[in-house]
Length: 282
Image (cartoon, rainbow, N blue to C red):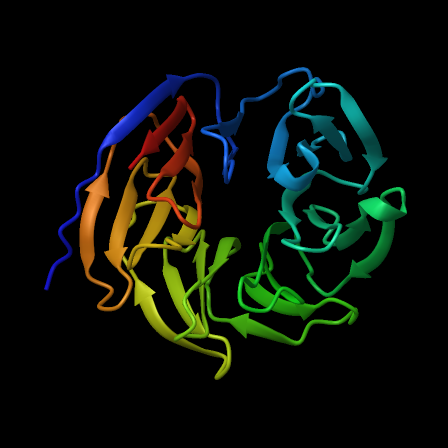
């Protein structure tokens, strides 16, 4: 049975390149990082809401983390975080922890209750670490995607990876966890133009999604709907059935390359970041 998908465009905002997007869980806000706001002069590649603190955290090419109060826009913290560009930020859902990944091939754990001390460093990747995502079913584990062609799964408290998923032919740009309780699945997208679904208990690739014409830049299991969304430098977002892996829809808003997709538990809203702006769809 094909899904009855009704995709409505809610908002289109043209701008410079949008490399990162996030949705606020309770306010009607989407956070879109264009090359620079008053963060710094260099590109900002990673940004997240920390709603319980009324914060926005950004990571940029000057290798620093900046934390802003989003009500006053004053800067709360500046952290010299890495020795190369910061690619990704993940905020722990319950602990005062932030994970960051960088072109210095490291992942770092920061504790804001300890004056933003770096409490752990995760080493093992041999190329840029492009994205990190915390397991929604087990907040002590997280996955990382790297240009060394692998996805690694890690545990807080352990410095070496639990295991490595190896199967892409080129660098891996993006990774996400399946949110439902029934399937121990990860999804990854890479420069080989392929999307892979992994069973992380058996550590096997169970499905490969083909069809994008360029590098895969964003992947997500929707937290509410039985769909997978994949974004590519070919300018399209493809929507796949999460159970049959059938291609259900291809979205093309002619905003050049796709860089980021963000969904929210409890919502049908999805925000997509492109070279030429951002779109909120429902």
